[in-house]
Image (cartoon, rainbow, N blue to C red; front, side, top):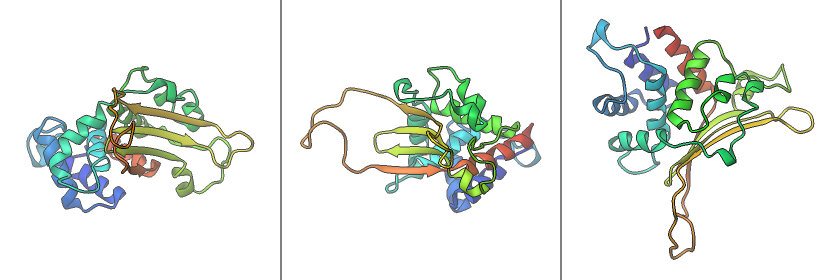
Length: 216
């Protein structure tokens, strides 16, 4: 089975972040009920796709400055509970990219649910592919898929594009955002002028899916 420690190591390796840092994020989530736990050593809990999704959100969506680890739970909840913005999403093309589970999600699902289903599906054999090109290198292919976390006003997207396809390239996208009423400030309508974006490719999703599949 895949343990929390293995999940931390896989996340750190894939994202290029020190293991010690990821451990701190994981501890915050575990202490607040956002990661499976039951004992230590051989009795440690087997991590789930949801655990992997929560840790990915907490680490990848954290701001570039400030007490990021202490905000792990708030960050995980703020981004994980974001709902789909259907008018800005195109989900019907995801099966063309080898990811049919994303197209089968309910219309009002959350980012946490989508990442959980995506990681679980990859663990069961789904894999990202480019419909317009068979011989492209894995690294280049992985970069055609992305999960983006944007702040400080939380929103995110899962995006797939076929840059090597002929003619009009197929595109799939799911946008997650909580739309509220914005107040008019000194700069007019809108939020802060500084926008921070974190992005991962399919390489991280594959690594997490492969790890979680061992828990089965």
